[in-house]
Image (cartoon, rainbow, N blue to C red):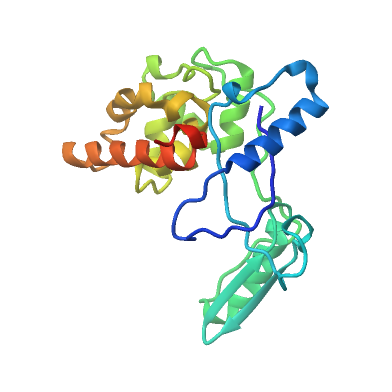
Amino acid sequence: MLVGTTDVDHREDIQKEPSITEEEISYLLEAIQLFFPSLDVSVDNCISTFAGIRPVLSEGILSPSEESRDYVVWKDKGLVTVTGGKLTTFRKMAWDTLKAAKSFLPPVRFIGRSDPVFSPVPDTIPEEDFGLSAETWRRLYGRYGEAANELVKTAAIDDLTLIPGTFTLWAELPFTARHEQVKHLSDLLLRRVRIGLLTPMGGKEYIKRVQKLCESSLPWDRKRWKQEIRDYLDLWRQAYSLPDKKK
């Protein structure tokens, strides 16, 4: 279960990764208990938390939850800036940004405004299914498109199993590390496959297997791996755990 969201002013250093507050936890738990009392959800059921900073257009008059979700795009001496907006308007915002940047770019053909953003998911699974269910194939195609075939065919059989508590295959870790511009372990576990949000303690018990799987995909020596693991676990504790577990 994913519960959210809250809208509060962020008054901390924006260079530091934001994290949930005690007040927000209390607010969200009260809402769950009000609307779903039979679930008997408490803070002990929480695996992880995450927070972000939403750039809104504000005159400082309204409360955070009442602020506009509109956006603006402007040009200034070759710099194109976009601020505001929300996920559901991402495509229009992207079009307006590209339109503003067009004069600074080499000639390029953009896709049509009515063209689909994503490739359709195939109706049928491959003849050789490698023991994966139709549901798993559908998720892989939805996540990786046609590259799902390469992901599965190049994986070891033992890695075509689910990471406990998730719908993610072990084989997705090295494939993602190799193809999705991973610079740090936190990129992989929190912003690509996201198992750091779905497993206890950010997947700490799986770190050694993650390293073994991804060593050939990430050009890190032993010293770098130790530092990446240390930095990742510190970051998870500070920004993705419950406040009382940060210490």
